[in-house]
Image (tube, rainbow, N blue to C red; front, side, top):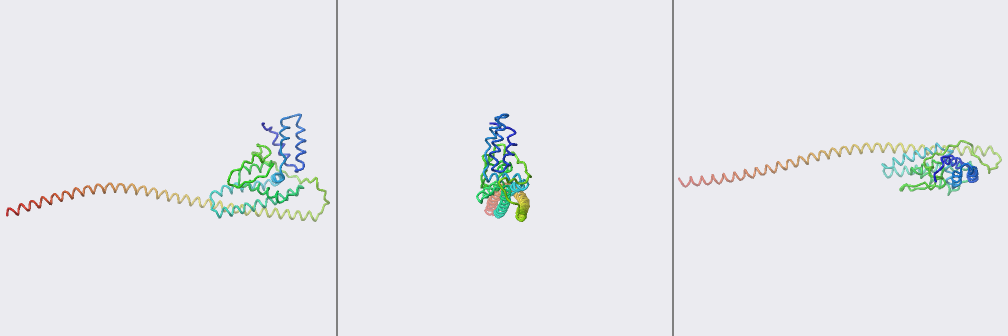
Length: 297
């Protein structure tokens, strides 16, 4: 069944809602479309409710778009750099990548709390696994950036991942979620304002932001160092390769010269053998002449 061009726009809106609002809003939109576009209505109705972990990642993509884009960009650069790094450097980069995903996961949990959704440790692990997948796999990065995840992602980094089943619809893999700037909406929370608590929460949020920015800066610095090392090693590799090519060329010349000398040596040996035969024959003739002379005396 072909997807209606308007389906992505509707999905972008629905997957940006608070998790409890998703199903009622989806069903209401499908009902609204039933008379005007029955096919689109069916497609909207078929949109799956995201898991809690997927919803947290979708929330992060919309409200911390720049941070998610940086994570994806760093992941792409690390994938490129890892092809030429030694084992110890790879382990260091892997540790830094884990620190970065852990820091962004912490921010995602705080963001979910701001939107009235508590995140357990198990769900947090799924969020972190999804962010890790986005860093190590390009297809997973596209799925995360779509903001239309319905299930968490995971990858070992060894085999490729097909995230098609983890997004709301196939076209999501080429889509980027619309950033949101509105304040968190918490319809289920009825709390008496507490200025001191708000100040503490703001301070904690600033601290979390500073921590994630520091982690990001360290990861970016490590990436820059890794890229510099790769470039230096590539230059050294090219130099060594050029020296090897020169040695191969010189060896080929020496082998050719050796063949020529062998041919010349073979010819010289033949001439020497002929000269030896001539000397032996002349010696015999001289000895015979000398004997004849002695007999005549």
